[in-house]
Image (cartoon, rainbow, N blue to C red):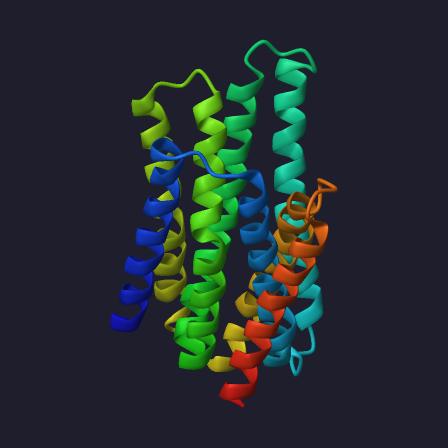
Length: 242
C-alpha cells in the first residue's frame, strides 16, 4: 500500500503539471504528437510484453481482454452519439461539447488505468511498476490535451480548473478501489482484472493515442520513431525484469 501511495502521488503530480502548462505557455502541435505517440508505444508494450504474458495461462483471459476493450469502446461511442444528437454538426458551442466529451473519455480511461495500477501493485511489484510507468508516460499529455481543449471552450477558468482537478483524481481513485477490491482475491483471481486492464490499455493505444499521433501528415516519421521508442522502453523493462 505504501508503494501504491507513492505511485499515486507521482501520477497526481504529472497530471497537475500537464494541466497547468497550457495556461502558462503555448506548445507546438508537433511536440505534443510526439508525446502522444510515445505514450501509445508504452501502452502497447505494457499490453504485449507484460499484461498478456501474465494472464495467458488463464482459460478465459482473452475473453476478458475483449470485454475490457469493448467496454471502453461502447462507453465512448455512446457518449459521442449523445453529444452529436444534442448539439449537431453546426453546434454554436462546439468546443464546450468537445471539451466535455474529452473529459468523460479521459475520466473513463483514467479510472481503468488506475484500476490496472491497483491490480498490478497487488499482484506483483514488477507489474505494478510497469503499470505505473505506462500511466505516467501519457498522464501529463492527457491532462495537457484536456486543458488545451477546455481553453478553447467558453468555460470559466474556475470551471476548467475544477474539471481538470477531477480528472487528476480519477487514476488515484481507480487504484485505491482496485486495491481494496482485489486484496481478498487469490493470484489466480487477479488474472481476470489484469486481462480487463489489458483490454482497456489496448483500446486507449489503438483507438485514441495512435489516431491522434498520426492524424496529420506532418512529422509522421518522428511519431513512428517516438512510438517505437515507447515500445523499446517497455521491452527493456520486460527484459530487465526477466
